[in-house]
Amino acid sequence: MATHTPASPTTIRQSEELGQLVRQYRIEQGLLQMDLAGLAGTGNRFIVDLERGKPTLQLQKVLDVLDLMGLEVVVKRKGNSGHGE
Image (cartoon, rainbow, N blue to C red; front, side, top):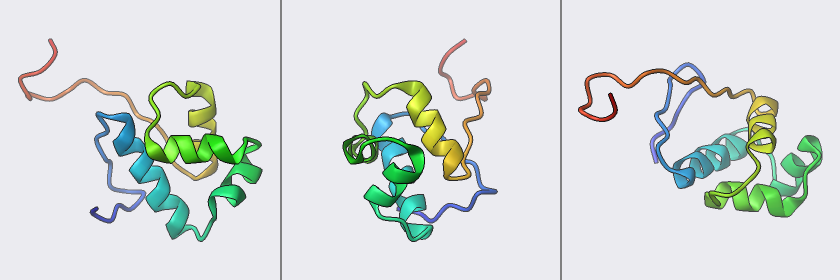
């Protein structure tokens, strides 16, 4: 997986991609899954499921974990990719 910096946006199209990104940033920050779970006020299972890309996780909890890690979600219209409207 390519290394991402906070300044380089990453397009996420699958929950697995988000999970991989969260895992990468967690490791870069020197945190164990249980450390992140404790900081986020979630169970360890939630972090495991998030990193595995479980598609049915609660969105607000995911957003809270991303915020805690110094990440944010930005929604924008797609460029001329031939998808969407």
